Amino acid sequence: MRPFPEGSAEELRAALLRARTKGEFQRAQCLWLRVALKMKAQEVATALGWHVNRRFQARYLREGEAALKGPGRGGRRRQNLAARAERALLNRLLEAERPNEVLQARAVSEAYEKAVGHPVSRSIVYKMLTRNGWRRVLTGRVVPAGTWAASRLSGDELSPEG
Image (cartoon, rainbow, N blue to C red; front, side):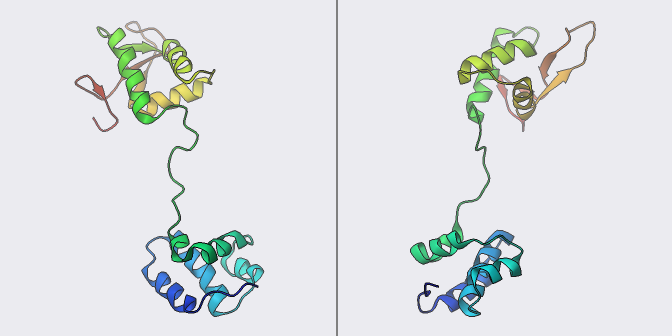
């Protein structure tokens, strides 16, 4: 077991006290248990209900306290288009259909596939429409089945907040 630098126990105790999220607290606690109580990685994992994680401990030894402030797990990691590009695509399609402000799902799907450069499933297109504040128009006499309308339009710009 590689030794931790002098003063690590006090530094980690302070990190425990100033942790703002559960994740920050658990990362600091993982290291503090290892340093202050001399627990092995397996014992720390059992105490915290984690799997054995030696990578995080090695990262702390390399980077110091910066390892505790690791990047969050949020974000759209597997996005095809950025949110701004999605809105621009929908605005462009809306301008082409301006008088009725209703879009065919097939046309949106084809434009989306052309923009990303590969085929995508319908669910991806429907999630993109929902994410950008569009809603499905039910089948009726006025609009054909499978159409989408902007439910929150403010001027020419589409936005979920609008």
